[in-house]
Length: 504
Image 1 (cartoon, one colour):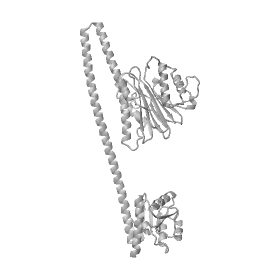
Image 2 (cartoon, rainbow, N blue to C red):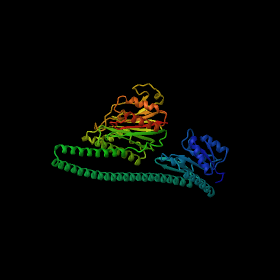
Image 3 (cartoon, one colour):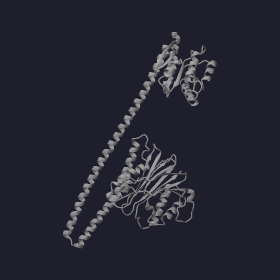
Image 4 (cartoon, rainbow, N blue to C red):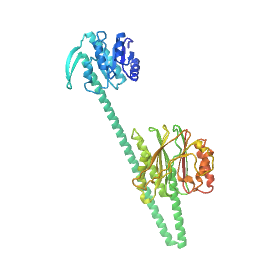
């Protein structure tokens, strides 16, 4: 590309003018930029250019008027003019021809298309000069308006070809968008089909388990009948109690195994600006506590979830398992089938889980649940609660208060009454948001942290103060040791579950 091929850019937007200058300079053109039509005419009087690239919409003299004045000038009327336009109206082409423009480029433009269009104008203009082709005066009517055109056949043909090229490019983009949309729909359908297969497999396993329980029930029933016919009343009652004890032990062990499988193996890692730790201590019998995390990197959010079934035993563990399965399925599907993955909000999640737990109404089990979403870029914690205590946001400066009181000094939380999952068919779960400052400690917990003792909150805060400046992993380990020492030989009557996070 010869350095003599000089382009004059006319654009009142400094940002757009600079962008054009960089693009065309990289393509090998010599560039000068001016902010308006008056400055462009002064530049043409002062220097020679091989092409003028002008925006149409400018204050004062617009691109059409500038083009007309250039073409009427005996000194620089030979310079080709290319107009930059959004092409919002059908008669924009006729306006450009009437002004004497040599070509136009539709915004937004592709870099390669822009450079190629300028080179085409160079080539066509040079051809017209060599062939001696002159512009003629033509009158046209277009869409009810009359236009006087002073253009050569080559100019008119260039405009028509540019119009067709831009139209074809727009149609191609539309086809590409439709193709991508179809591919997303196919992907979504495949994901749903896969989930359906997984649910069918799970249903088959549940049917097999149910069949095994039926057989076990028959065996136990037969054993009872044999005992009733073999032993006297005292021995029969002892044997029955032993069978019941073994059955309960087996059921409780199964429930504890299910619970352990539902609890994450480790806390979230590499969350920008935050560190996490958690603790889960099962009770003597299977309870219903559950905690979990879901990292949505696209939405820049970490969902922190914690819940507690209002009863104990196998039934409570099954409610917890069903709830946890629905949570992970909802979160996983929401991220995999949508570009905008912020649809599963805390309140929406609670409404979905309420239907699941409500369908188990015959068990008369309810569940408290706390759904939170931590926006770690904005440092805001979005909260929705279903009968569960809200998380505590603890300011480190306020933890320095060493007064030995029952009041949690420096705790920032919001307590609002709300129904539990499964209690009401159409509940109104409260939601709110709390800011998180750097250095804050956030605590999510179940009521097992109270240790069935009215003085436990004071103890827990005192233990937290002892290591308040340590990483959360060490704080969690210290709290676990303190809880074990506090309980001694006793086992907690309820699961103890809590999650710690520190804003760095």
